Image (tube, rainbow, N blue to C red; front, side, top):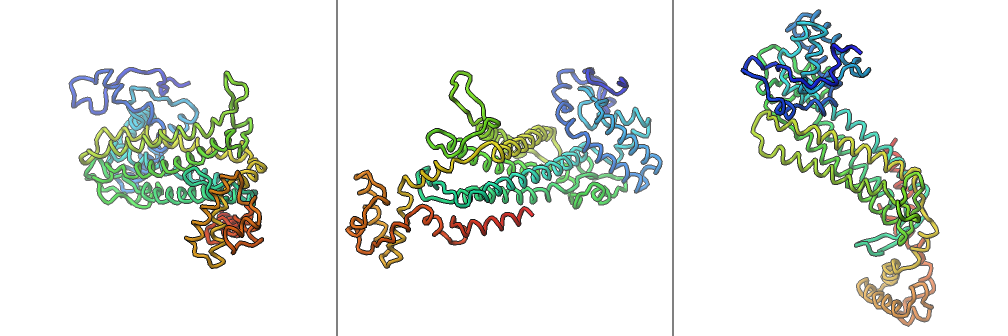
Length: 471
């Protein structure tokens, strides 16, 4: 390995670019405290990409010669390859990824390398790098969301006429199609997908060329660099460009909502896999055992997703607090945005991947248990009231009557389906033999055929609509 540019073990503190302003070097402990290279190395390829665009712009506007521009681009591409091959490993002495790249470039290109920072500050440089990184990550997360939606859709397509108890207040309410239940999460994730797209548009604005805070005296072309980097436009105000982190907060907010949806589904899977519910069985590939209780099979994946949700929430709160008191323009506090972003991105991506695997191959629904569950309760009571209302009985009168029926059944240890026709007629003369098919679970679900409802016809239409969104 070329020790000239491999600084893996180098922890010495070299004089910085501003050292002529100061009489002495930073205290080693302060240098360590100040450094961000341990985490912002994540941005290195984005930093190189942004620097290449800046070098091309400097040559395009004749601020530097075409030959110098080509030399800078070649040197930057060499650094990219060195990093990918594990040869470029800047240490603490580099302070941050931007200085590390520039220093290595100067080693490669000599004095020409020192021209790269013309008409640029680390303030607009780091803003550019962070946006390039986040733009890329948003697209990757959107792809994962689409994959997860596809798994939900495949599972729902298989379970259109599988019934599951529907709950309000975690109490049995009305039976629903399992597909309808799963499609609720599809719709949540659709909003997540669209929300990320909206965040992407506000991430996709270039601060490059804003300088430290006030722009630059050089005749730069900010629209040119924005175009090279695929940004929609440059920031219209240089102060805003270097200090804006709204896009990071928006992303963390969108990420938090993704985690909310994953966590809600995780909580249901945890409940469903318990012995008390027994609605799903976890496969060995996505569950673990107990170190002391041999009979246990633990839902580790959904529990971890539920737990990791708090991490992303915390980063959102931290970013809000970070920004709330910052005067314009750039402040060192903003260095704290990166670890929050990096960790949130990694957490969301890992949770999406794990939950997708869990639903695709890590669990199976116990259809027999589900069928028994929807036949063991009074979740068809509303349908008795609807039955009477359809025969001309005012709904509120019917509602009160059915409440008494349920109470009578509970006292007698019966379900509604167990009442004889004579008992029904004693309750109200409008009851006929057709009350039995009307309160059968499948008919109860099929009858809810209003738009967006759980009726099988509506669910099949929803599946077609969902599939078109993915395509």
